[in-house]
Image (cartoon, rainbow, N blue to C red; front, side, top):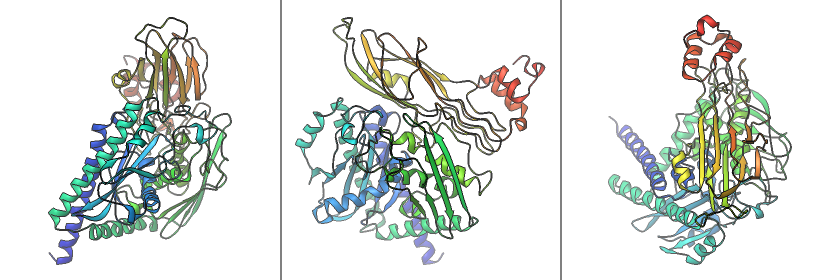
Length: 560
């Protein structure tokens, strides 16, 4: 084997090691975090960066909205803190939506990495905290100032000494102080774990810094991604999708231009800034547009600054996908998670049978603000609590496979277990099960949504902050596939509730939720009859739907 081949193999081994380092970094965050959104749902990210602030590797554990947005964040820390003001033992922090990951509930922590006293790079991580003050998590704010405590880019610790005045300010501005402060320390700790493992790696391979491996990673990632793009036809495609919005529907529109060595995604024509907190900072738009293009065209290339560089995303300032400060942005994910569906719809016009049908896409989250009953029927032990729960509808069917049931795509976060949720406050989840017949019909069926019923323990009442979409605009099928079922929310007395916003619930009532299904792919006439019978046996599809939508006879369904 030639010397160059040996060097290439060594660099590949170090690249894989870096990915392992950041995966351990993320695992440490999951294991030490206080909030269920991090510990149970995995709403986090972790990554390592070179001295120029370029992301070299990301953890597999995490969300694209965090990781891809965080790819831009380290440069802001370098500019504002100043590299000449960075010391070993420093830890930096922010939740700036326009420099971080899009809303105040995501806290990003960056730590400069030193090896044998020399600055060699950075570790960064992000986590969603259960509360950040203000109105509470929801779409009701009219500006970002109402949405919670804003943390500018600053030092959380300098030379190993934590700024306790900052910690005190946080404690006095959030409802769940122990959880939020605990998560900040967990973020700092996971970066420290990454730093230790990186130093071990550099010692093992006899390296003084990351320069050599960084150039190898970035060069190979960029070249591999550009090769995928170069193989595509030089075409321009457009697509649009209407979604619920807050009070009025929102139109998302994109134009893709495939060039020889890059793809441009322009969201001109998209609706303007909304008065409520569903707006998206441009950094988050870029994160999910790049994710969609990379998933479709170069999924096997590891995610880093170079593999993202060929995807050039723009959106007009003042649009809902490029909302300027101080627009309210708390639920930027509800709109942002729809971006891949819009991009996929454009790609489908150029490359057939590549991308899935539309799915539920945005998370079906809710936050419950519990308190002792105000009518005098509260026992002494009744408490206040903020309980956030992540939930998912169905994903869209794929060109050769059914959609996934109750699975978060594109965010990738996990559904929170009932037991963990009920442990965090006086909430009761009475029901949580798959929703039959919610997946869109097709040759390949859309993934199922879920049913949920939620209430409070005796002696408590609560407000319910809904964060859902697909109420009036369900997921659309592709290539003849049917729509997924829409979202419905209401109380157990039949009163309908809005898909977004904080809403009071009468004492003793339950909130009844039906989360949306993913859409189908291909004509239902082409679906394998054995697959339909299997769905009927599994309870995914009712006998009535099998007869109505797939043309099965009573004789075929007998005994199922």
